[in-house]
Amino acid sequence: MKYSTIKILPLFLGGILFSQSKQDSLQFRNIADEILVNGTAYENLHQLTKNIGHRLSGSDAYEKATDWAVLKLKEAGADKVWKEEVMVPVWERGKESLQIKDQNGKWKPLRMLSLGNSEGTKGKNVEAEIVFVKNKEDFDKLPDAAIKGKIVFFNYAFNQKFISTGQAYGDAGKYRRSAASWAGKRGAKAVIIRSLSSAFDDVPHTGMMRYDADDTFKIAAVAIGPKSADELEKTLKTQKVIAKLNSNCAMKGEKLSHSVIGEITGNKDKSVIVVGGHLDSWDVGEGAQDDGAGIVQSIEILRAFKKMGLKNNHTIRVVCFANEENGVKGGNKYAENIKKNNENHIFAIETDGGGFTPRGIALVMSPEKRQQVQSWKNLFLPYGVYNFDMQYAGTDIEPMEPLGVPLAELVPDSQRYFDIHHSDEDTFDKVNRRELLLGATTMGQLIYMIDKSW
Image 1 (tube, rainbow, N blue to C red):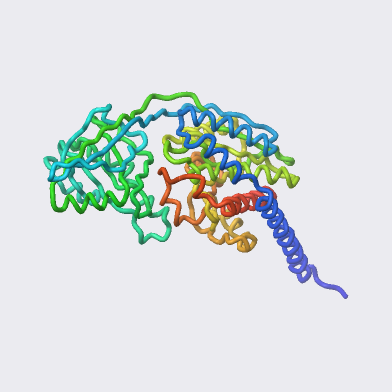
Image 2 (cartoon, rainbow, N blue to C red):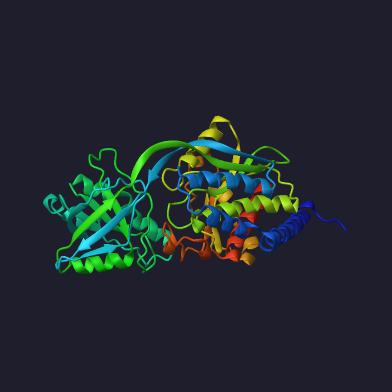
């Protein structure tokens, strides 16, 4: 019996596609089995957080972390490991304190943290009346006379209506970044903000702020916990409050540091697929979720591919970026170097949302490539990964976007991340082993598909 080619072709292609899907599904299972059963990411994170701890760029602890990362990449089976030079800013916190005095003349200490990159008070007491505003609109309505010589307190709360806590973080972020410049331009002595936290505790959170280029006076900026912020607002509605701030934080120039890079060479060509996170953290807590988790997940993918004997077509490169938290010098330098060296990068993914259960992958790429990745959704569904609609990428890999590199970001469940982000609470005990390894599994599965398809 004869069949026309037109009739046979759809059946033939359908069989190929079914076979490919079945093979990919099996490989997804193999990757998951290897990482979930034999993964070393959790143990590596314990070493990083407990033996080194927090590791701000420019600190001795960060330099120890670079040596640790070199060792772990070699243990994972990288064919090549090296350190990439990068100049990073040096910011030191020093001793700091904040007290308020009520109408009865009693001083009360408040838990606080200076914001990263903020100038301090040079160890001197800055004492002034507190002026409360809820938001930038309220601040703009005040006359200059009401601000000059005062300490301005912004109590803009994390918006609990946003289901995505990242959206709430972005919404409130302008107060951390810019409140000191707003207030300093109008003669304030210092600024206090409510921490960017989704929690209702009294834990202060730090994070980077910045001064505008035309700021004549760089005033000190500090954050207090949500509970203290609400209590202070309540008090200020009925009485005058004096604050006394003393801080020693300051920028100390720049120093030579490094990002750490390891790779397994491509069997087909030298085109590069990047997976990475940032090795630095703030100088509080242990930097476990932000972003120790991302570092050990990235190393885990390299280990798993090597252990499984997967013959990657393209070079798979792990990048442990320097200085994401207060300068992005590592990410910018990496993009600068690949452009200078004319390296072809076909994809880059960062994991910087914590080691929580993976829910999706955000994509920044052409519509055609986005549709292709989204067409693999059914392969990810058995692992609880379903959201491929978001469009953003990690801070460290964003400098590669102008070079035409397709980008992505692992999207873990975000509901608990900003409870501990940039605070003393970001410690190893907040990380669940299985959730951490599932994140590495998701990225490993995606890299497998991109390596074979692009």
